[in-house]
Amino acid sequence: MCEITQLNQIAIAMGNQHRLAMLVLMMEGRYFTAKELAYGAGIQPSAATGHLKTLVASKMVKSFSQGKFKYFTLYSADVASVIESVICLAATKEIRRSKPDAAMCHARLCFNHLAGRLGINIYRFMDEMKFITSDNDSKILRVTGEGKNWLRRNHFNCSALFQSETKQAIQCMDWSERIPHLGGKLGSIIAVNFMNSGWIRRKKNSRAVIITEEGYENISRLFNIHMKNNQE
Image: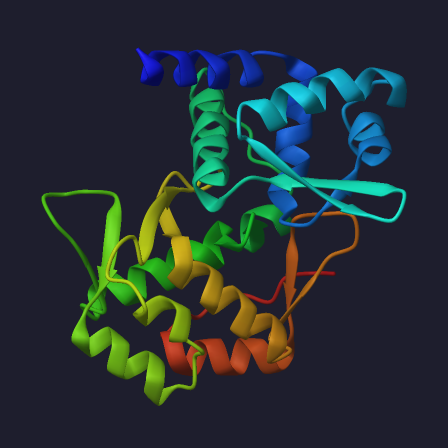
């Protein structure tokens, strides 16, 4: 019965267009103020409080207080995966499907990991090289011994990944490409590595990321990915 209650809370939380708009905004992977989320969802700041309380109570969103300010972000990568799947499902309802803008399709953040063509190509490479595997066609992935050696050899900081054998990575359905991309801990590690190395950078006011020239060179070398340069 407890599980049914929790499912009901999640359904209620996502069943309002303004709350859903807030959740999609938070897919960018950073913290937002209530005012930013309100304006992003097309409502007045005074109306955001109740919506955010519902999202926090359902554990879709968590808050962080600092001084007189309170910030909000998605509760976990699992929540981001659910939202990405809902976006994908909603898109299938259209008879004639139009893709989002080119930059979002090319490379973007899906909460804390990479999506778009860049994300699915990373997943494809890791899968083809047998660096990741799943049991019984589960969406939950684990990193193989070969995968761990490859990550260490290429200087990915994977200490958090190797502390646990459970849920090291997941398949996250990409809503623009309709092919899974790499999520979970491994997906986050790769995204952080790319950011810290200067291979990608965030596009202002967007989930889209820009791949730098250095990034194209190194991503192509490591992941055997050949993509046309995206425009800023």
